[in-house]
Length: 302
Ligand code: NCD
Image (tube, rainbow, N blue to C red; front, top):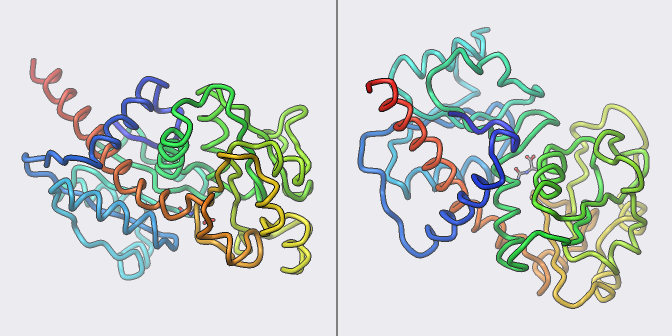
């Protein structure tokens, strides 16, 4: 069992993971059977990597140290051979982040360890999506009819892709805002673009995205101040948000670009709450894949 994209989970499974994550906030049942995890991060990460490590430690898993910078992949070893090696020495679950879209296609069906996707290129980011869902659910209890606007660098964002599909499946109304040139035709569909100032005044959730300079190989670019004036969440805009609406951002944030410095920790902001929730959601994801592995082993034996 892997979790590679949100499509690997049914709505019921998503809600089950969220329930377990909520429970982990109050009490933790450790996994007692010996279980080994490795985190293979071939792209930079602060939050996702540390959060998975924290989740693994809280669950009582043994975590192998793996440094992508000094691994044999630097000698030309393939990702497949790297993962097979970890499997051969006894790793049960690997969390992988890689710059290539759908890097996991070369692994699926060919490896026995479980993979949790920690982010693939501009593709998918299921753990970020689940922690965002948890944060939204805590606030609004249900997703049905909720107005969520994802703002900014949509085309380069795996966070936008995972969130848009899962939120829509769960009944939310997802719209997009930001520079038109940065929209993604496939995600946008018909009539899902909303003017930013209108989004500010009508959304229950404003999900701001980082301007991903490292992925900008095409299209229009903006000066920081210009972007901030057009699409940045400023104090003046926050004052126009509806009562009870919240601000989210997967971070890292470019303070003063997509979001004003003083807004990052304002009352409506759930940015650090998202990070806290991330640990519980990742515990629930790990528990989910490990339990499925056990069930499969039993089916095989019987
Ligand atoms: C995101 C990512 O890496 O996709 N960050 C994260 O995981 N918290 C978003 C981003 O880098 O902008």
